[in-house]
Image 1 (cartoon, helix red, strand yellow):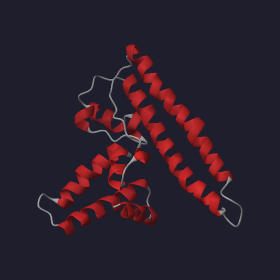
Image 2 (cartoon, helix red, strand yellow):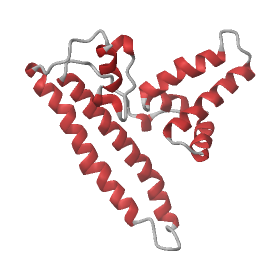
Image 3 (cartoon, helix red, strand yellow):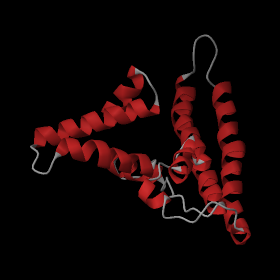
Length: 186
């Protein structure tokens, strides 16, 4: 039970992921800081902190400044905000993952990488293979595959994608807007 509690509450991945699996986690070493891993562990931690503080947080302030007054943003500002917000979200999530990877290594665990250049994806399916990889894998294994079954009809496959991605939207935020966003991605 203590080992499972550690897995559930492992603070480097607890807040923003990556979503680790028990089978991978429990095969790791016993918890303890290994000074030999200090340098390789600090690199992603510092990189993540810099990504968050220098890039993501400053981009958020810039986007708030251009959001416009009571009439809202201009057309050019809205375009900058659209792409800027996508960049800010990526930098935030990727920074948290970098920090989790480094902290995991510091404590002797290998935490998976969670982003693989998602904005270079060829299409939406490729995007989800690169964005929050652990969440995409969790959705595929625990939602999509049970809904799709082995010999599913085309209609059932499309329904499985739509339901899975709608629930993915709800994971990102509790509201109809997030569910519709997920359905659009599906």
